[in-house]
Length: 260
Ligand code: DAK
Image (cartoon, rainbow, N blue to C red; front, side, top):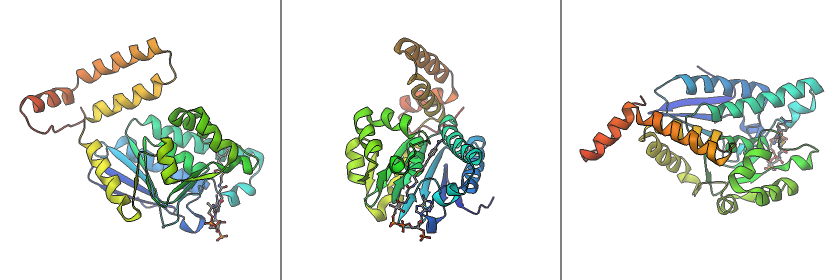
């Protein structure tokens, strides 16, 4: 399948999607979001894909957020549809229950930063920067930023970023717990691949259950969340992956998980 605003390729278990509008700093327009949603169809239904990497084309930007030029010409109703579509696409990325890594290769602001927050993990190049400038535009972070950022790093630092609209470096983002690792610019791809491969070597059943437990459990009371954890663990315990994981340990070999 070919796309106008994305480059998509699979290597092993890993599907990589490159946001490809470098002249607009990979800003999110309606077509790009629709195409991204089509990639999620592939990610969701193709059992040979275990992990999605999201990154940006060019050296400057991961993604500069919603396409301000396109937004400027929309009616209120079109704007509502554009924004809620983006929100649904980002939420779908989390609900697929396969892990994703944002390989943040440059500026990640507004909806671009929020896209990275919808990914399971974020790995940034030293040149990356992060910001939520919506309050400078008379808007608020509307692609889940007001909800996901405080859950990842806590309310205080999240409010600092949202209220000020300032941009922070990859290093500061790492210290704040926004990104999981920072890599030299020319080592970003290699670093992301190493992380992806180590995750893909684990049981897809376990990974699915972990993502579900953390996502759903995060909005439940502790006792209910622990009950959910028990049920999901019991489900995992009935899988062929669990049998393979235990056998591999006892036979002192690497497991070969099939995700069943
Ligand atoms: N949209 C369209 N074009 C953009 C763009 C954007 N967001 N960001 C940059 N560009 C374009 C620039 O216009 C320029 O194009 P030309 O003028 O060359 O044609 C080109 O990309 C290069 O940009 P700069 O020359 O500005 O590059 P610099 O390195 O100097 O600056 C920058 C990089 C990222 C600091 C700067 O470009 C910038 O501030 N860009 C705008 C960032 C921004 O404000 N993004 C939008 C955030 S608001 C909601 C859901 C979602 C949202 C809101 C509500 N609801 C559900 C209600 C989300 C909103 C957002 O994402």
